[in-house]
Length: 118
Image (cartoon, rainbow, N blue to C red; front, side, top):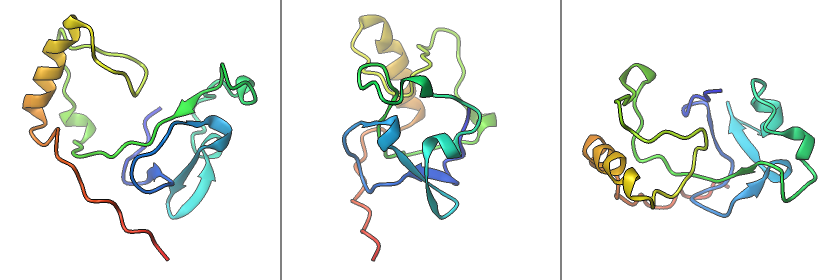
């Protein structure tokens, strides 16, 4: 399922620790809601919601650059994974990392923290 980054963002400011599915929320169209309510197209292994070893975890991210779906980078040989977060340590991933660095030149830019709303 694809969530539009303009409509759905993590409900907390900045980066933080992974959160279990039952502790995760999204800010969607101005409302804070549980992920299972917002993401109707996926189950996220909801049968394991109370099992800390098997439940889904969500990791807040700070997108430095996004592109429309029609401009997505899709090339033969790039590493792909259904998980949204992974740590590229295997040597075979190096070419994917280098190619994405070239496509996203601000890959190491650090954004200032988002001011907390009152």
